[in-house]
Amino acid sequence: MPSLFSYSPKELSTDAFLAWLFESFTTEPSLIGKESGFFHKLGLCKSAAVKISDIKVSMQEKKTDLIVRFLMDGKESKCLFENKVNTTIHNNQLEVYKTRFPKMDHYFYLKLGFITFHEKLEAKSLGYELIDSILLHDALLGLKSSNCIVNDYIGFLKKEFIDEGLAIESDVKSRRSSVFSSVFSKSYAQQFFMSRLHDDLHALSMGDLSFSSKSHVGGSPWTQLCIAKKKSFYGSKSEFLIWKIEKRSGGWFLKLMQYSRISPSHKLAKQSRLSKLRSDVLSTPTIKHFKCGSVSNQGEYSSDIVVFYFDKNPPIDMLKFLPKLSEEIVKIY
Image (cartoon, rainbow, N blue to C red):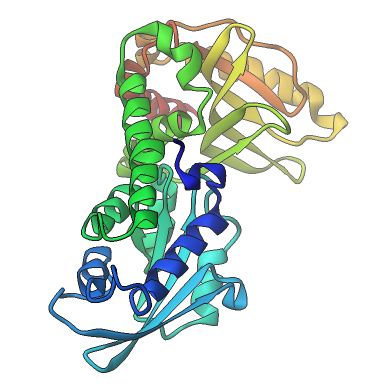
């Protein structure tokens, strides 16, 4: 029988489950007395030996997902949760929540799906502690067999997020080209690949790095990482160099693209620059480690510089050489 939570695996379900769980520590006989261990494993308190009491939960307070207030050894403590399933941080919501609630003891960024390098950087820079599906699962294991709803959620986390995530990561690291026709159709795989690259480029102190992962309207996901830009290059319009994962009839691929929302008067200048960029990239020393695919000459704003199909370039090999290639490209740029 499918898990109850598989019928509604959205953020509101995560919020509702956690709100129910926190409140149940004072109302559900099978959970009473087990709150300290769970709070400790999740990071709400430093020791499982403390006494937790008077738990109160607030949902959607000033648009926050969850706020938990409780007494820890008689002293008031407050924790704010921003919960995600597969979506990511939008706008400046984490900063806004801290401004609205400046005196919390803990700020948590909890996500069941893959936590990207971009999310880790932003959350940690703003003082948020990270909770992933593995940490939440391990904390809940201390409550296993106590309650059927908790048991169902533990199974849901293990099957839908932990096991699924490990399988996708294994496929991305595989050298079997047959898996690449399907694994990159999943946003998790794209984010895992691009986050590895983002992490490596950040370690090289490259500036202008910007990560984004979304889906085409009614279609497939895409993930991209901007690695360089020139401000106000075509009049008031800037130009960007971006690595992007997406799909064409030939399959899933990684491309380096030139992007600028130019006005018609700059079309010829952008096309001329594209030709130079293609030539420059193909002259880099590290390009020899890649098998280049056919580029498209379509697109007014977004233009292919170089294309690498995953079935011709194992992702694990690409990740080995992409940081150096990116460094060479940015230096030329």
